[in-house]
Length: 264
Image (cartoon, rainbow, N blue to C red; front, side):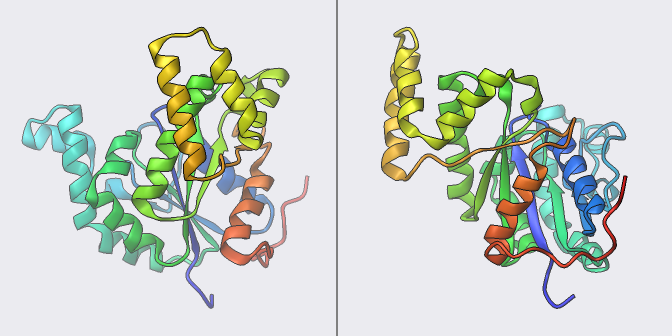
């Protein structure tokens, strides 16, 4: 390959569907003739949903830290975040031995560990290089309400500010929303006035007032970012997410397939 693979760091709140999204997008890329490499940076990942090409658990495991240092789950997560940073060049070496179009990176389940520790920024800088973006997943359980949507926008803006990378907002698990709910949430991402009106229409409480004021601050900072609806369950929206990535990485040009796309 003539250049480093593009790196997509998948972030979001716990339960937003990061691991499922990474798996589904990797499957979509392979079926369309592309060659992604999956990187797991979650030392506490359980289950067999993801089969990563590079797995941080080869160097750092959450359960091992708990046993060795007598730490609870939260303390072990904090310790693991810093230990991963110490192992990042070994991870980078393992990645360099792969030949891939994209790196799809599953980040730790706790967004605060990814977003607010300096170690995480060092990891992203080391692995992502000059061609990286963050896919921030919106959990529909929270995004379906106007105040919840504003909260996710603020968290997304914080992640973008912390890492200073291009960011794509993704509505994960969109299949759990009804057609009207989905249209409403997508409408909020396309027209700021619709979101503002929805916040205003919520029964007046101190929390809603705060959400309204925060939303106004978001408007001042810049336009309300768009949202790409996707579903790992039925693979909808993954092509749109790919196009958004290529817009950022290559001005919209398509990748040259590395193999023949899969056929039905």
